[in-house]
Length: 509
Image 1: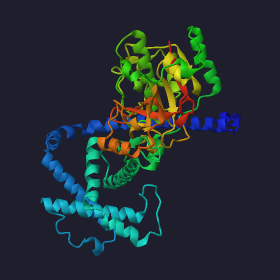
Image 2: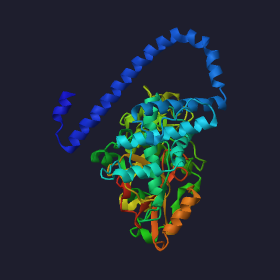
Image 3: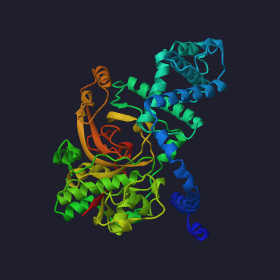
Image 4: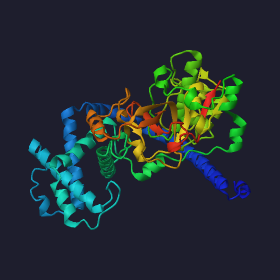
């Protein structure tokens, strides 16, 4: 290893190579630790087996708790949160904390009083620590004006944060390790909720053409967000030159004319969601495997179209476990996934190698009885994307996502992007729409009140045409517009907004 380091020049590419080597060693080290842990666990399980079966009846009884008991647990949980915050906050008479005899009551009045005081304490605490504002900024000169505005906030708004948080926990099956983590998640959720509210108040103003809502990532801290959305691995130019067939070459090999005037040679709209070659968007979970999902979805489309079949689900988990040029849940790049498909005989069926949302110790592709395969990797330049979509089909692209992108719920996204390419997705089409109709899409499920507000705010500025890409994500069908996002572009599609067009790859037979 030291000899390898000495041979590497301390250039940008050299340093990046060192970083990739370090990540690779960390992954192998992590696997060794996991293997040891499993060995110890196996021995421990042998001894605790008797205890497990002895207590089986008790566990079954706990599972049988009805909804009323679960509600009582939530109330008790709220009391615990209240006590924690109360110990941290300064208790003064202006918030009326001395009248707290109802905290331990089980009546509706007691529960209501509990919620009321809880959220006053939560708000008071959050304001004092000054870390949960929308822009993480404080106004030190606001003085009594801010305090007065806080006092005048309605009781309903305070209670709404709690009710939304518990609904959020249930909807996304959120389970936290302890109370400290739950308190932190609550604050993260509240910050996201406030950000969404602020954004949606501006919908239709200043050219804003998309809406937001909280989702499975809304309880992430900034550090968790940065860790989850890591920079995609780089691909050396010599490796691309060796394995990639440029779009222009592919078209020439198949006697397809290379269209120089894209705006005249192709239709204004192309949407492969309507072609029945795509499965519903899948969910990568808490594993950083977007690169695997994008490439597998790309291959699923190609396989279905070439074979004339309904789409078949292939295995993302195989790519996560077996593609050694990638780093499993710690990140990767679509190019290396496609290269793995070619060099290792294709990809298994999803039912034979199901997804686990974590990288396993071993590659288990020996269990597969059928694999789908292709032979070449294609790529395209930014000004060839529309041509590629029409002549080849969907293509895998890299994008730079931010929390605004993550909170997207519908419309045409024109928000801030990350200059770092940190997410891989599947580009499945393009189109254009009058700005006033940005939400009038059959796949959009944005709240009707927001759509109404948008149309009211957009008046006088509704003659503009908005051009967009149609992108399939890997955060499940409940994210965005049925698992998709429409992303702003220019008419020619070569403006690389959010990085679309910088890294483009696709499979070829």
